[in-house]
Image (cartoon, rainbow, N blue to C red; front, side, top):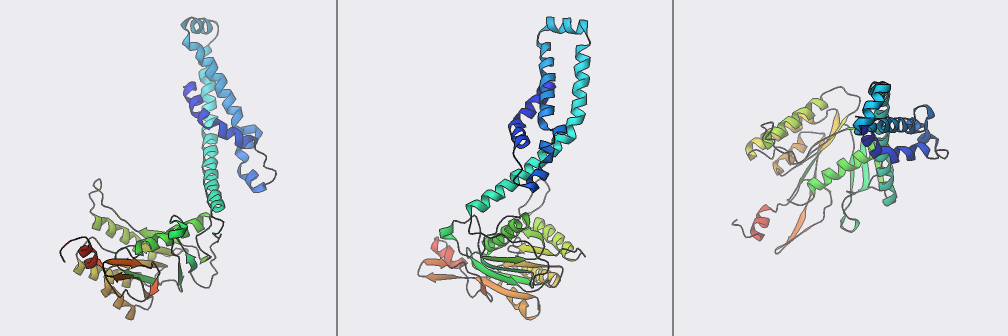
Length: 338
């Protein structure tokens, strides 16, 4: 058992040794965070050396003659078994603390490296006193190459507002929702965001994007989405101090168009004006009419240009419902009957 513990510790020993001996004088916050490593009373090296000694003593068991002689003279196995048990009890909580701090440091290093690789990105902290819940300029997706990236501006004026986003296939609806989600997540984690200006209050982020079925749980795609939206509705109706920022991609796409339209209308009416803000994308242009009856809802769209057999996309978010569709054109271009 001592050999197994030594083997596991040896995987982390170089990292623990580095953190234990690092010069923290230039950063007091980092020094305080890494105290579990450099505290001499509980330093990793103390326990690693002790485990190595016990493992070395236990290796005598590999020779039956030596083992018999040692145990004949003294209770060798009993002594080192007791020592190992004592160290295990002491080591267990400390190892959890070392690893937890290490995992957090690894995350900090990843975000620092991301910031270093993207000096044009900006840091932004949530400000619950901001004039509007959310506003961003030149917002882009950090995983899209710079030469291919199209950025957008967006402002959400009040809590309870919903942006209904329509658009043709491949126009950029899903990518924009992901762009919002990843930048909010990076902001709340302390990383820079892909925007020239970025202002947000604190939010609980919730998404219903790329929902899949589950054979294990016996859920179809549609039922899985329904359960996600049910959970979202519960969150919007709670009295939590932090509102929800939700993103729903192609709402109820797993069912027929008649029931999808009816269900979508009911859902939009029930989430508008609640404890959050959100973006909902859809192919159902009929839902755009709800802007006349739901004051918190506004229409936005992504469009394309079709010239002959070629389609081009701007990937720019524009006000109003989408004025065009392209599904039949795509079918025709691929040789399907229309």
